[in-house]
Length: 122
Image (cartoon, rainbow, N blue to C red; front, side, top):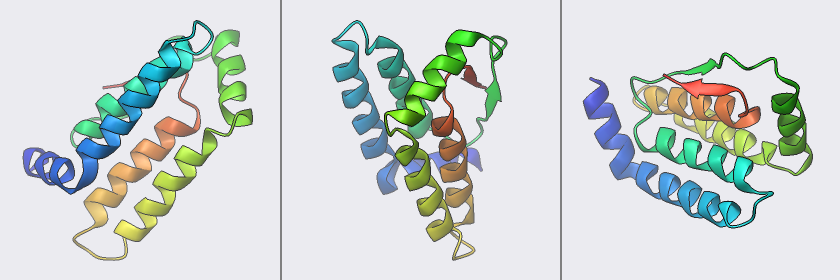
């Protein structure tokens, strides 16, 4: 079932979302200061390409002060809008019964993009 979900997700826009995350992540990686943020955006792109059958967990270093500082910077700099966008798309997808699985994937992406540092994808 996850193969069908991933295929439909890929065709219905998952590839474009992943491509946008990868391009923006690559642009952030050009500067030394932006490398941690670019790495997170590339992690989003990888997850956004095939989200079915995967989940987001706290990493083993979730309690580190560097993760907290980067998460605070992430929110202050406005990247919380990614989480809000995925949450809205999740709600829109959940209006129909057929869209509920896709809405759940958007909610996973929203959770990952709210506080991305210290998270891992399993």
